[in-house]
Image (cartoon, rainbow, N blue to C red):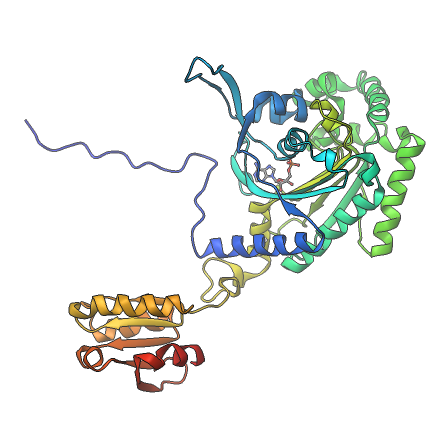
Length: 448
Ligand code: AMP
């Protein structure tokens, strides 16, 4: 009998998911650090909600008829493990707004009376067809501003402030050429009237449209406006516009948002077709895009958001108007990499690695010096220096080559040095080589 075992197959990351590796993760961290810093300046605090929730939350909060809920969710029946538990349908979150509003209700944040300004950074999950800029696990950086009406949560100032903050964040990240498209989808009542008008307008023409749009015309006519189907564009352009169905208060609200943006000097265009994919939006909706050819291909929406004045009530909570957005972090990274070659993974010393070479590379001369080298590294690292330790089996030439790639200085620990409590340090910047007492090493490396 052969003792040879069959080679096990190589396991790979699941389709639509990816590993993020260094040094690229340094760019992710920079983006997240900048977002946290900007959000802090605008008075936002972080919220972290669970990655999975009761399926009902998304069915009710996002909407049964949306693409997300009808075909993109990762849902499973979670079996009860004890008699006290009930089996439950759970879903990996496809977006974070519903979870944040659930948490707002559950923790009675409305009782605090003030405006809640929350941000989150985390993975979301949608079973979409993977392509560049579209993944099944992707990251969103988002904010939600919500609270009782008395906290000013309905004010157009909030909409404009959120949009102005986004413009600032994108500018500070160095995103070039972004465009803001804005629309108002009105109140729930406005949308009801608009939906009826759309249905009526679609009735005589829908047979000429693609299959998807025929279905949408029946189930959720607003979605037809989202359609990118080239053959249907002429019909869609001729459909009624939501702007003509807004009541006075929605119209005034939208005008006030635009006036505040104008006052801040944030440029935008009004796009009457921008209705967005989720059911909970009311009044202001928006999207930031980058021009074609900037790393996103056809997925040119960098982020989207809007107002959701009725969402809390839809989830059984108190009246809590709000507005929020979600940035597709994967897409933001693609754009930053595309727009600045020095941020690409292949660039030699990318600026986003924070150009940090390590302070020192310790080269033990002989395996007997390994332990002393590690002890020295521990001391230097605890003093705040960044240090790499080589291996005593390396020849001196290899130690120098390796050190030169990763560190500003090489610290050589040979028999003599260990015996005399010293180290030989060479700076790659100046070429200077000195022997110093270990007690003075930290100071020297800090200065070098
Ligand atoms: P949404 O939650 O659908 O409003 O999406 C907000 C933003 O998340 C979009 O503008 C995209 O940048 C990003 N996004 C949505 N779906 C995906 C996906 N499957 N892969 C990567 N990014 C996504």
